[in-house]
Image 1 (cartoon, rainbow, N blue to C red):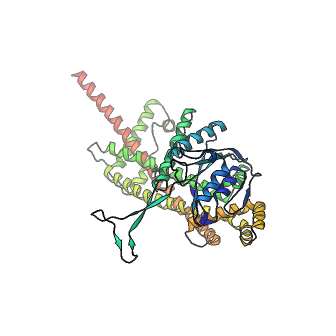
Image 2 (image 1 turned 90 degrees about the vertical axis):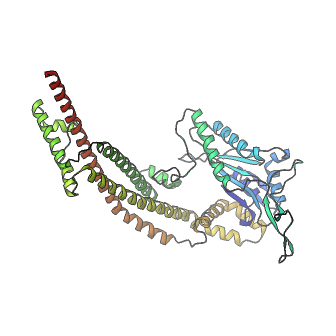
Image 3 (image 1 turned 45 degrees about the vertical axis):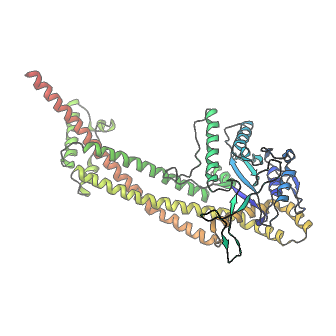
Length: 484
């Protein structure tokens, strides 16, 4: 989502021309915006709400009317929302899906919507829709309404309050719609997720999308970074890229964190189950007895001990015994304490890894954006330096792609850096340092996983020995009862 504002040198007419791939003239400044050579535009349409003049179904008429009614130099001209459309659906299904979403979510609330669907010719499909929305409501007579109005501030008695310093009555600004409310972004994102999931389900596609971040969903992992077209093509050819390596590292760590968390949960459940039994027998003795029973069983059946291990009837307990002795663990209570310590270490390590993943992802995005910023800056600077309107327009027509790419990159830095400097050299150095510290935490993660696996082995053997001895006692009682 973004606001197209005149204060940042943008215009609604230029935005509409670019997204629709058309030639439009902006009556406000006389500039011609010709994007008829732009490819990838597969569908465009304008949806009008109640009370909107029917002539606004023409793109040029609509956005020039917006430019005309907005007088200020820093006016907000339009809101743009971009949505990704599922590659699993046909183009006609995607058009209908986007149309229904826009109609029910925006147009029914009083906004005009200019919908342009793009399907760029790339190796990686990227069907998406640009939705430009008007910012003002309509009056019943079809004229533009106000975005906001002023009302007097009243005291407890309902009287206007006079400001002696400003020599006027106190006023406050009231929005005429809730379209700019901060909660709307969340509401619209959730609405799109609902529309998309319902459509996927209707086509028998079980996979679902969630508008929330991984963190808000309670997921451990961090999302991988966006590769982009060039990096994707190189990876498909078997050429490793820096972005691809970061994604592989993030995925491997996410998988290991998931696996370790599941193992810790399983060990915790097994400990809780075994602690229901009152005895606190030495665990090393229990394991040795389990192993001895396995040997006796093998001898009685004429089997080799290795066959029992392969059949998971008996597990090698030598490492488990070494683990217990090495950590001075004797009882189930002490094993439970060790498990709690492992969980605490896992939690601390998980926080470190995820924090580092976030920073590495942010640095990668900053550096990726620099690839669009640096090579296109010269064209943008030259365009800004031209004062003659016709020459400026001609230069823009020839270099529009470079200028727009640079403006998008600069906008990203404005939002991300909040006035900070663009320092690619420092970003690369920090990224390299973070990558080098990865190895230490990865070793700790492996060690944690080994310890958890040994605890699982101990609990497995203890549980199976108890079950075996319980059956032996049951058989013994049954035989005594039979003799009696």
